[in-house]
Length: 210
Image 1 (spheres, helix red, strand yellow):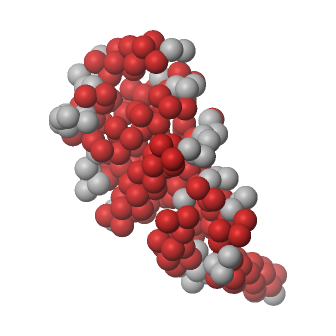
Image 2: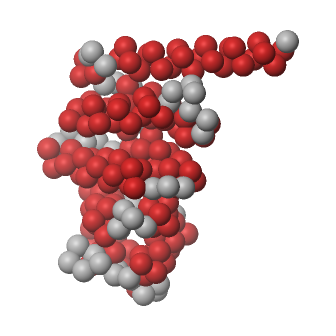
C-alpha cells in the first residue's frame, strides 16, 4: 500500500468517527474524538492495513504527541494499539531517524506508566512495552538505566501485583534479547531478579505440596 493510499484509508476511518489523528500534530482533538479514533483503528485491525513501517511509526508518533498522559482511558487504548501493531510487525530501528521514533515510543510508555493509577492500565502499558522492546534492546541504550530502574523494581518477587510482575519480567527478557554487550554490567541485576522469582516460585510450590 502506497503512502497516499495508507493516509487516505486512515483518514477515512478517523473521519467516520469525527476525529483526525493525522492532524493532531498541529491541534489535539477532544478527548472523546481521540477515543473514537483509536477504537476505530483497533476495530479495523490497523496492523494489517499498516504494512509499511515508516507509515506505521508516523501514525504512532502522532498518537504519542496527541494523547495526554493523564488520561488513563486513552493510554490504555493506545497501549493496546501499540501491542496490536508490534505483535504483527517487527520494526527495524537501525537508522537514526527510526531510532528516534523508538525513543519517542519508549518515553511515552515510561511516562504513561508513571502517571497511571489503575492496575489494568499499567498492565496494558507493560504489555505494549514488552512488544516494543522485543529484539530492540540494542537500539535503546540511552533508556537502559531508566527501564531497568522501573522494571527490576516491578519484577521483585515480593510485588503482590502478580500480573504487573509477570509483564515486567517479560519486558526484562525482551530488553535483554540480542542486546549483547550494551547491557554489560547490568545483566547481573536482571539475573538476580529472575532467579529470585524462580526461587520464590519453587518455595510456593513446596508450601502448597506440604
